[in-house]
Image 1 (cartoon, rainbow, N blue to C red):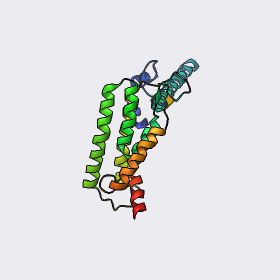
Image 2: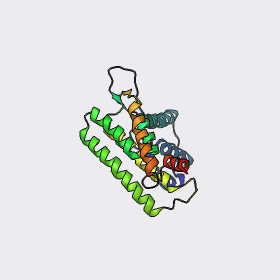
Image 3: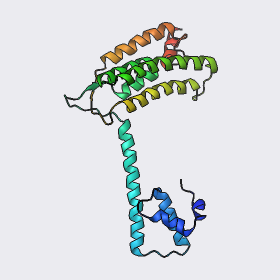
Image 4: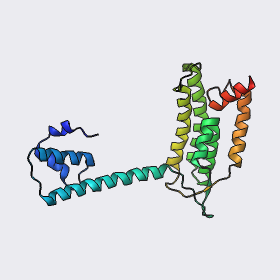
Length: 221
């Protein structure tokens, strides 16, 4: 957000710098500087006006390209190419981490990284999954009241942090825009089913802050 009042404090010479090719200012700042100079009586030729508008358009296109690149970095690039490596999708890892704890999510991501021969990130991911699980339990059971019914219950946020952490590791450790085939859901389903069994027997001791564990606990009542 560009504050026009701030730019009004600049001299004409300083504002002219906003209109020069190759500057690092955002397009909104260039447009605002141009408007202020016009307000002050600066007369622009049609050629200069065209050059400024082209500069603004170029900057907007660069920003859009950058946003698109960032979105592509976080997306799953699933392909049908039979030569592509088979990996568990980020959505599978994220959902399993939110519903069944970071442990199954970390195991799935670790298997992905081992396939990609990213051995150090794989070890780090597995350790992260178990340590975050322990950390979540300690923080939530020590500092929060589980009696709250607010939709802003802190346990949901803390659980999401673990899942998002695994997602970030996946983005950073996996080659950008790597095309891959989606691995079968059989192992993730078995892994999550096994975790659900553990939840059934230890829902209050270890998993009380996970939504699925609460459902299991209510089912047992």
